[in-house]
Image 1 (cartoon, one colour):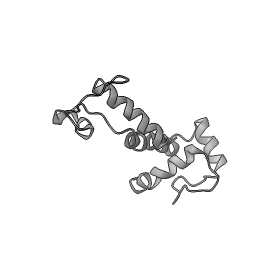
Image 2 (cartoon, one colour):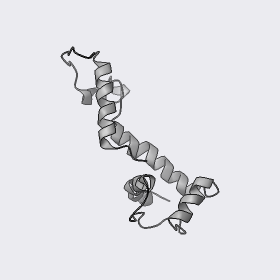
Image 3 (spheres, one colour):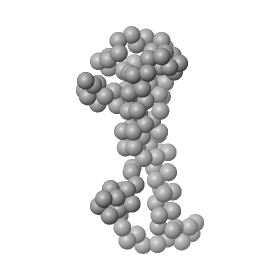
Image 4 (cartoon, helix red, strand yellow):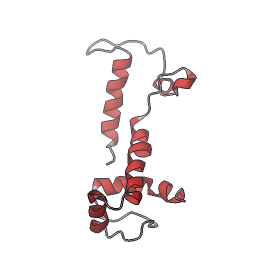
Length: 117
């Protein structure tokens, strides 16, 4: 499911505090911007990723791909029955009154649908 933005921000805040060695009451000067820390390792950075982006691009797209390819698994059969998905490649996944997982899948569905061969 999609992690709430507030949760992602809080986790990133904890990560930043850990990277710069900030404890409860002391603060330090940040010599490097967090955006620079998130650059790829090949550019000499630590290679961290923003959680919100990673949540959408990696986790949700993987689940969506599994929804399309693993027809016999129980969770896929359950989701297809619950949301009446008969056609493998629907135009849209948006419905009203759906679960957080389905809302998350609908966020990345257009990217997946446009790149299916």
